Image 1: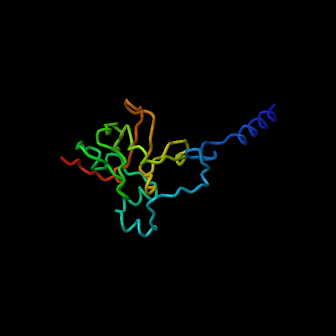
Image 2 (image 1 turned 90 degrees about the vertical axis):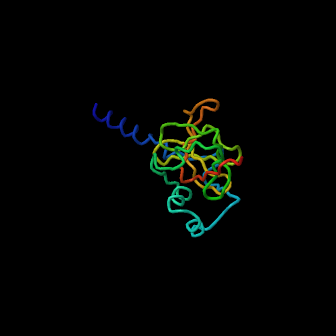
Image 3 (image 1 turned 135 degrees about the vertical axis):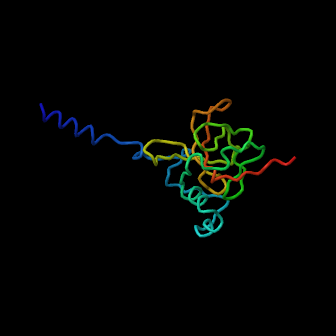
Length: 166
């Protein structure tokens, strides 16, 4: 009896695998395909151009502490651009208070944000990058408000705010 249970347990454990072990694909492409971006710099050039926090977030996919971004409470009209290259990624009229501690938007500037699959914390998440330089912005979740139902949870360090001109 114990032998059968032990064999069943061994089979179960050897056939189980977590999301982090699955083949990772992005936008229907194998993760072995390297994306090319319009703006490219060496690592040293990125370090020279960015603050230490911007560099860690944009180039090494770090996450800033919640409630630490000056942009979290920003309610001014304007555009949020990638801190790495200046590409427009979000508009202020799509920003909302998600209560998460990170600037949140329900819609990106179409064509300026690229998506990938992230398994870094053991389960599948949709990661967002600047489509121009590849800088890590944050993640998108399906728990946002209407009209999209999406919550783009973005690191403030990945963004710069450009006020609207009058």
